[in-house]
Amino acid sequence: MHPTAAGSQTSQTSPTSRTAGRPARSYPKGERRRAAIVETAFAVFASDGYAGASMVQIAAACGVSRAGLLHHFPTKESLLAAVLEERDRVNGELFFQGVEPGRDGIAYFQHLIRLIEYNAGQRELLRLFGSLSTEAAAPAHPAHAYFANRYRRVAGDLDAAFRDAAARGLVRAGVDLDGVARDLIALIDGLQIQWLIQPEHIDIAARLRRRLGELLTVDL
Image 1 (cartoon, rainbow, N blue to C red):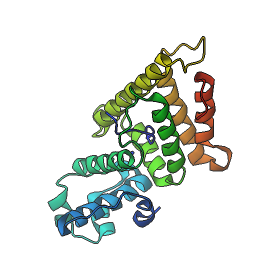
Image 2: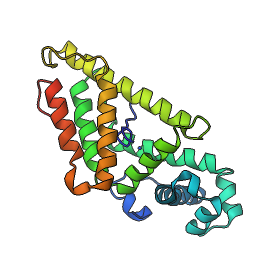
Image 3: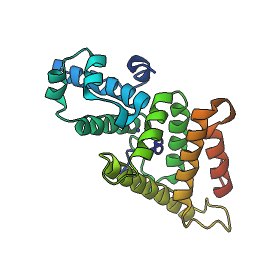
Image 4: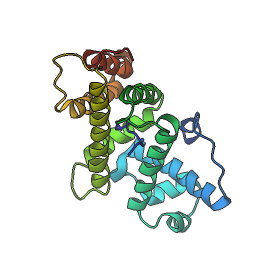
């Protein structure tokens, strides 16, 4: 997340509680098992980090044999990729269906704020992305390319949204948009880390809304 746990799909507690509010999906039996493994792996990765989690541990948490786990995910890297992809799919379906930042930047910002508000109830999600983004700074980490591509994609979406807003005369006079997208990502990521440590002192959505209000002439 970021948009990171605040990311978009225009171009991230217990497995049961984390699925609340998700779009309903109907799975054949094999896909249901695969989905359950992904849910459990999410919780384990969030709790212990990618490096600290083992396939044996995840298999036990899922109630399947290691061989059964490897049938669906031959490597821990493939399981991590599935966890990240599922997180992006859910956020895309919940918050960014039909939203094109280059055509309606204001709508994109509104949906981004809603995603941030939603993530305030997804502590494991933010913890997972906080720990993974740090681990993935190493080029050899299996999530390194994912995060590099994600930051690039989210920055591109933000840039497109600001360009649209500027073309419609909705950016405040004197605002220099160069680098603003990366600055906003840094703001959100930094606030999310602080929120994980002191949630009672941080309202990420409110602070993002205030920052956007300093850049735009419309209320979000």
